[in-house]
Amino acid sequence: MNSKNQYLLLFTGNEWWNQLSQAEIQEVIDQSKEWYGKLAAAGKVKASQALAREGATISGKNARVFSDGPFAESKEALGGYLLLEAASLDEAIAIAKGSPSLRHGTTIDVRPLSDDCPLDFRARQLGCQGRMVEQLATA
Amino acid sequence: MSTPTHNGYMLIFRGTDWYKGLSAEEMQQVGDKWMAWFKGLMASGKAVAGNPLEREGKIVGKNRVVSDGPFAESKETIGGYFLLKVNTMDAALTIAKDCPGLPYGIRVEVRPVAGECPLVEQLRNEAELAQA
Image (spheres, chains in turn cyan, orange):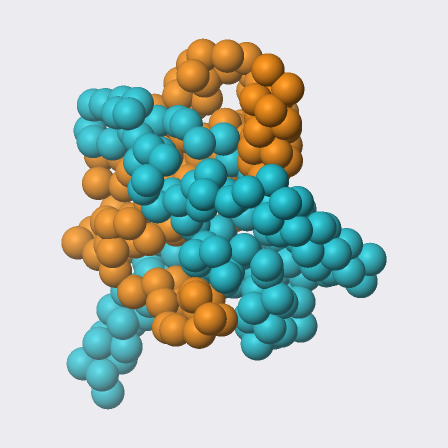
């Protein structure tokens, strides 16, 4: 899984479009299409999907299901994602700044994809620390 | 919620602080289980994508202000995701329940992927209301 130069934009917000008129919604749609179209044409978009405003959360040893979820209209929830191919975090941020959804209150998290499972990384770090301690002890 | 969908489901893994208390061996074990879980799902065609995210990143908010974040260790921070190609919420929940991170405090959000942009949907709803 090569994730080099891939950035995930995570769009979080409430359902702000419920407050807009048809004309305003149409305007955001047109602007979004233009923004997205340019990115896609430039080969920057790897994938993009919206999430339905429903779902469930699972947690705990017994895998309990909470199906009310954080998806009420008024609450902030993850609304969708866009997987970008970009040269750097700065380019990914610059792209995110162009999103028409921002002025309506959406927040965009810009996150680099990782090649490495964070657990492997942490285990390696700990293993490495262990070896360093050993080396220091034997030095 | 039980409406079948052809768009699939997203599993969102929340929590980036849950493995801090584990030893290197325990972490290796959970990591191995996790990889085996993911590879099994990919091999059976139930998962079509998945990735861990780097811990650092930036947040772009109102007025295009860029701030640091997410914060390194948090219960809410998204640590990674899977995209599932299954047709029902129950099937997605069954898979999510197998997440090897659950006993350690990770939370798995299970969300249906939307068929269309919510803006387009809203516009259509308003148009239908106007006609009614």
